[in-house]
Length: 148
Figure (tube, rainbow, N blue to C red):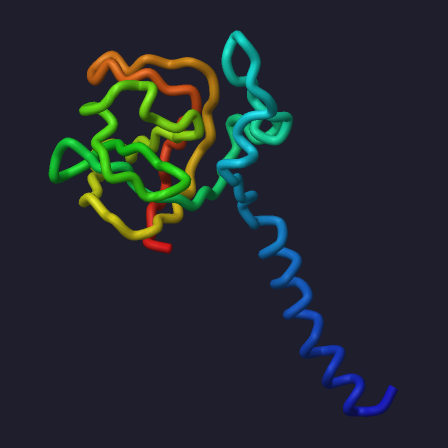
C-alpha cells in the first residue's frame, strides 16, 4: 500500500462509519397511498405497510387542512390542499386518507397553506378525542413539522 492509498483509506473510514450511523437513524417515510390496503363494505382496511410502521417514528408529506383557530395544537394533514374547513362540511366531502397530527404538549403551530413535512410517532385505529370529539383512524404525534 502506497502513501496515497493509505491516506484515502484513513479518510474513507470515518465517512463510512458516519454513513452507516446515518442509515441506521433514517426515518421511514409513509405516503398517503400506503395508508389503506382496500375498501370494503365495512370501510377501509389498513395496508400491511402502515401496520408494520405502527408505533414507529415516520415522516409524511402533505398539506394542512384549513383550521378553525389561529394557533394549532393539532391539525389535519391531507394529500392535496383543501379549501374547505373540515368541521364546516359533511363527512362525505372528506377524503378517506387524512391524518390527524397532534403537536407535542405546549407547542403550537400557525396555519399554513404550504406543503408540510411531519415527523412523529404513528398510531392507527379508531380513536375519539375527548376534548374535540374528532374521530380519527390515523394519527401522527409530531416531533417536528417543517415546510416542504
